[in-house]
Image (cartoon, rainbow, N blue to C red):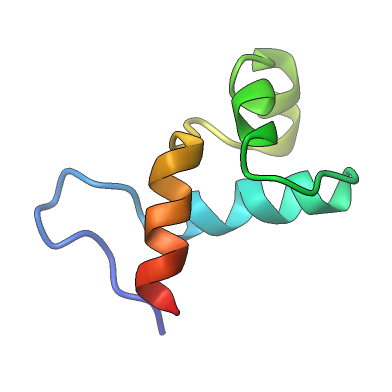
Length: 66
């Protein structure tokens, strides 16, 4: 099980995983493509995503998780 943010202010694990899964499903290959997804409000609404962490933040999180 993945732990949530310890500070209470960060992103939940699902907020990292869901955008990456959707990006990969759409044919994305680089975390930088999350930046393109972040600006597509209509797409985010259809996917049920409210907020997407920055690509660098996702990369840091993935490295910490191994």
